[in-house]
View 1 (cartoon, one colour):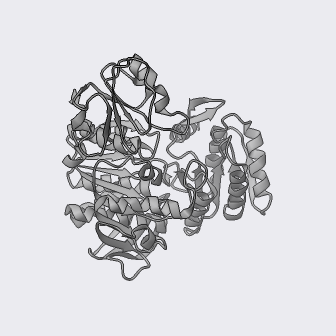
View 2 (cartoon, one colour):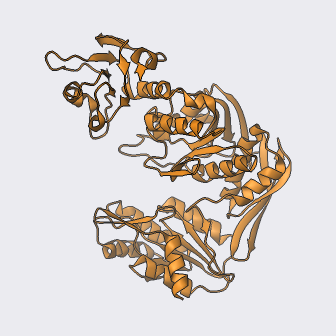
View 3 (tube, one colour):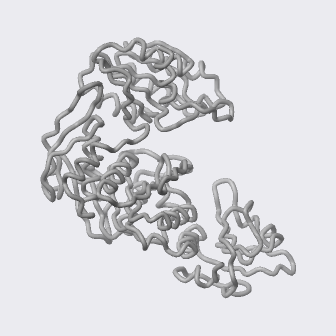
Length: 489
């Protein structure tokens, strides 16, 4: 139970009807969940406008409505109506107040950028937990609260869900939370209602620009930059060409990290690629604000960036060098260049690369390890752009020694039709390929035909544990498939 006035104390509002002194039993923004005595927040979504459910809210005896436009009430309706400029913005503050402002009881770390967010959150969690802290996580794959793992729908959840997670984390005894902050999340005010202790910018590439996302690169950059007006300490990648634009007009203390930029506050250098016992990694030296050697069990320069970002954050928690080194070595991120041990003779990795840009980056990184053969197993999702299929086919054809084309979430399309599109892209190259429609059979083929020194990457599924076919998600985890294949041998 809460008093409406207390939930609204950090926002400007107008009482259109009734009073702001009424009691509220719960806060709801989904018309299907309206209950007697609740505050119903009318949100304009992509497919449904909550303002159209005003009559339903009156019928179900909601205590109050939060609106951003004039609404028609049924005759004789006994309901309190509060108007604000933007209900989505207001909801973030209402949710924070409703849950007792939980973000104020933990250190909150927010990471934004096109790439590296997911991996970096897990690295930070690993390091801080090695230092003895209890850390919650919110991101693309899942939210982690103590022993509880909640699969994610959005990279950054709606503000009410986010505040609910924070409240559960406080209850579970978390000292800190590390979360991915998407540009969409910032644009839609999901992270309002609290201030981040640390806001981090990793990098920016032309992504998420189009219908229902960002109208231009300028808007994309501006949305990323909102984080630096909502945090106490900002930490930014000095090597990224967009850093100045993203951090422009920042209101926080700002520091930088980088590999190539000599002026960065925290730097990584002396980078060495590591390959032993079927595993890939990278070692480097940290200088500037700290001075020590480190390594991570994932490949490539971008792994150094992810590690350096995590170091830049954890430095503020007074974590010792030995704990940072141990945390980096032991961190595991499901489906992000994730090694799966099947042989000492060759390397097998699982990765989420599911578009041309990410596949190209992945394959170029693995090429640097000079494999005997680079084998890329992948498919493309159905009911998505055909251009992605042509591009991914062409990239794999150019960069892999062997492409194994298979199925990946065909949705409502025929898997073979998707494979045929991919083959058009590979056809522009001299790349060798085989096509095996059944993904488990394709993985079995890759393992059975692995040669000493090969690097085999299963691309596209990553952390996903399902295969979507004709509207149904069937259980399918590549780690389980690999185990079954090995047992069958």
